[in-house]
Length: 359
Ligand SMILES: Nc1ncnc2c1ncn2[C@@H]1O[C@H](COP(=O)(O)OP(=O)(O)OP(=O)(O)O)[C@@H](O)[C@H]1O
Image (cartoon, rainbow, N blue to C red):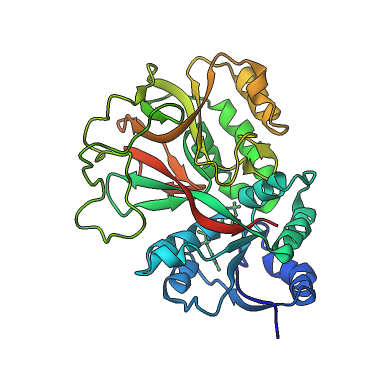
């Protein structure tokens, strides 16, 4: 009898297109030796994993594991939340084996475990060990409301401006693996620009309190999937008085992170923990020089960017935030690295809503 049974979803196209090779070279043997039975599912197209997870019988499974980039896990999480039994389904332990080009969650899990940082196939093997050890932790999810469409549940990041542009534009360098972000950053630096918008947040310190006379901020037409947002008024309504409005309206980037790593070699939020219930909000205001911005990104490899005392970089811990970009100007917003509708967006952290195998 196997000790555990898992569903393993593999995106053969992720990263440099080596995920299946990784499976046959490393993962299959590791799982067999650890007594973990697994059903291998090779995803065929975008949205496939989401469909499978929405319909799957989860009762016989101990975990859902993906061998891919962060994009596939985003689909799995949102597939779970869309189920009528979402409350139970979102508790199903998730596992991640890095096969993509970003692999931010995999790198974050290794970092939380205290092991020294590694990348590429070494990261895969290390994450394989964490998976086989099998201890499970809670993981924060952040609900994301856009001006239309259902809520999204995010485990990694919400980005606007420079970082979102690099994320999207560097897609074409995917075959380079993790180096894609370095190349993308250099290319974007050459055409550095300002993004205009309004940013506000609810600080993580002090009195939070749920919304008084809580107006449900989910649209009435939306199926009630996922926990309600208790800190956010509807997107078109004013914010409560305990929110902080950022005085500047000219930005180079906004990045909200809830894991430590933005990519394998980008330690963006060194203080972040899996289930601390905190969104690390970073923004860089306009006026920063190209050199200073480059220096920040280089420092991020070691996670020392916050010690650099850059006047244009602000870091604060929040429970919720709202961004209203000036939509007259072009720009991009990404959630866990996936592009979403450009326009007003707000987010609220749901502490420990999901569970992940963290070793
Ligand atoms: N067989 C497939 N062909 C094309 N796209 C797929 C396939 N299977 C899944 N996808 C989609 O590809 C997208 C990217 O996947 P994923 O994020 O896992 O890899 P990646 O982009 O290489 O990695 P990263 O997000 O780390 O950069 C996801 O939206 C996923 O749904």
